[in-house]
Image (tube, rainbow over all chains, first blue to last red; front, side, top):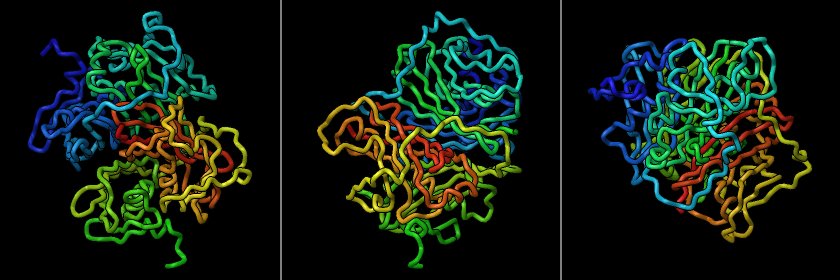
Length: 268
Length: 268
């Protein structure tokens, strides 16, 4: 048990009458409650662990409906529709009988087809050549080895107004862990809030919804081993208390693994 | 009744015991079943019409779980969580007791904040200067006035292999109709399948999931009137029978109204 990777401990679920039971993990604590990426991984893991599950994840959307409190939670995945090679899931995470997150997932048995990714990895120095970007403060930051190439959050919160919020970083689990769908979905939430790059001002905020599209098979994820992923995100619209970003994650050898989008709330 | 816009007739819902009843509309027929954008608009409209609804749409995800048959359907929206200024919805669309679509929506009371969109409208000729791109075949194409600037689907299905799939077009409802959240979500599905641009080969396909993020208020949408929107989409990953695209829609005067992403299944 003690040899388990912190990520595996964090997403562990016990089968219960109506689904699964889990507990938040201090290893992935954020300022308030858990890192959103780990909540996403817990919801996806409930689908992955379900005995009726057909195929592997193709698309996953999580909606953060309320702050997740430290402690136990219930996850209830339900196959809303099962076809010959695809399956549509509705997931609810609850605490104290109240919904704290909703999610939908599409799993599918994928078949070899013509392919050819269009979102190419930008040319960047290799991960080994880029120093680790250290940032302390909350536990989940210790669970990722981040190496920023572009768009780290400001050192000085001087209220500056930047024109864009493109970030690029190498990132992997710390300690290294072979990549799978659950850890990839968690990695998709690794981006610091784009508004912090745009404004250099710590307005209160939080992710309200995140979508992940998977472009690789389980075998292809496993082949990346514990290597670094190149993660990129850029803000799109910022207005009326909500902004979104669009992101991509590639393996170290340039294969597109996931595309991801999210909306964050911000206060001012 | 006969004066109603075809779009309003298509998304009309009658309250029922467990939600709403609607009917597919021949005005928005696709090759098989209805245009996916109208199914999305029907699901969102069920949230908009719900008497407990709080605020306006911020994010919406629809999962197309099965082919929608011509005829009647039920839509069941449920507020999974209601907070002070935000509300999370789970929606199911059914036919014959089987789920044909699932959706989640976030509605919120938006407040004025700092803002500044980062996804800028590309410089393009005005809609009035671009001739209408006529394409016949299925009914829903008649419901949109499309004026392609870039990335129309091939005239010759010669199996050519293009490197990219960027499309830009001016588009509005036909006949013109003042923009609202329901019509905007339908417009987000207006893009022809990216794989047709990449390959010039008509492989069977269909959208399996679409997400829309809204960046404008109800008033701002209404202000665009029946004007053209600039719609842009580009493919990202294509492998194992599924590809995705990322898109943006701006008002004629360059205001970002929505960002959207979707995954399509393709056969070969």
